[in-house]
Length: 87
Image 1 (cartoon, rainbow, N blue to C red):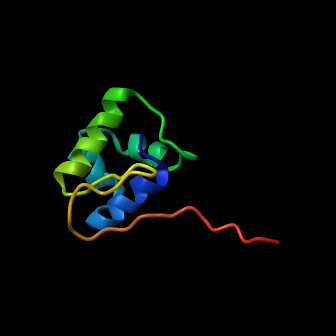
Image 2 (image 1 turned 45 degrees about the vertical axis):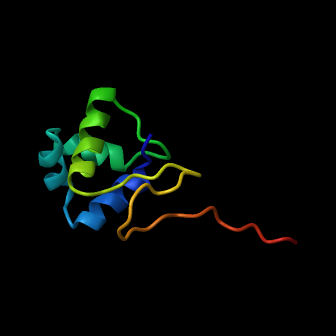
């Protein structure tokens, strides 16, 4: 699974806009816009999600699932769980 936040962050890391990502993945611009506007996990047709993820991976992005270690080297960013402070 990929979250909308991961999708926006991956696109930002690549320095591409939504239209460019749509072209890279072979999907429509409204599809990318809809995916990025999602709450939480992106939902959609499995084939379309696969195309987007594969396009990001071909471009050098490694998508890291929650509680999973990164497979490779290189630079990147990752969101961590917000700390809950004891009251």
